[in-house]
Amino acid sequence: SSGYSSQKLGVTDTGAASGNTAAVQTIGSGGNSTNRLLITGGWDLSTENQTGFTWFRQMHGTFTNRYGRGIYINQLGQYITIEKIGLLRYYTGLYFYGGVGNHNVNNVYCASCSGSGVSHYSGSSNNNFENIVSISNGENGMYFEASSNCNINNCILNANTNGILFYYVCTNNKITNVIANYNACGIKFSDCGNNINEIQDSTFNKNTFCGIYLYYYTRYVHIKNVTCNYNKYGIYLQKNSTANIIESAICSFNTTHGIFYEGSSSQNTIISATTNSNGVNGVDYSQSNNNIIISLIANSNVGNGVNLNNAHNNLIKKITANGNSKVFYVNGLNNICYKLIKGNSDVLYYTLPNSCKYPEVTLN
Image (cartoon, rainbow, N blue to C red; front, side, top):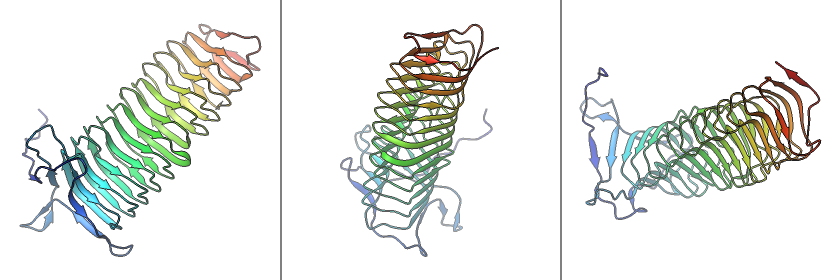
């Protein structure tokens, strides 16, 4: 027994929305920097105390139809604070559109939406999201398109397709203390270009595809102090995702690779990472060149500590690799490992003479 008695959730039924894009409740005005518009729920009107949440639900005659935008903030909405609101069974729970910005969203729940729990479209910027729970949605826990200067902190984004999806020229967004588990991808950046974004102090575990996915020309993402365990891939960089930094990452117990670079993902840096006990390789470079590993621990992987497959001019400054099938598998040119600490059970393997140089090798 949990020690807690069950309690019926009091829900306001907003009726049946006509389709995915129908605005169920629209906010078409706002405040300013000194006088914000406040939208808060959970008030006990008999005592005028804020004691809980206010819940809204879309209920269509066909139960499986989850339509509408629960709360729609259009381009006229600026400087709004939203707190203690729950949104259930819409297409999108909370929807921002048209360059709106300077909002604070705190303690909001979005669940069982057929699209995204929170959607952030068309250049919405300078918004803060804190203590958001967005779970069991058909597409994304949170979606950001062409959005900048947003802070996402202390959010739980489980059991969606993507916990968070950033799409197209998103810049200077910061994700901290996020838990995104049991999705297909914990967090995905797609086509974000030469823009700086940061992920830190977050957990992306038990996702069916990957913990962190940098896809298609996504650059200058700083990944720091993250855990990406028990996924298919821990961290996956694909299709010209370059100049990204991975620092203090733990990517272990994934069914394939702890960290995977594919498709000309170059000039990326691993400052420090632990990639242990993965189903294939600790780190895998596939057709990816000019990358740097400053410090890596890659132990007890079924395959290789580091796999350099058709990969050239990569620099490894320090690696500790014990209990793998091989420390390295190298099929490329001019790769250099300056300091290697390996166990006697590991072997070095390369397909071409002088394809990998080892100025200093230490045997345990």
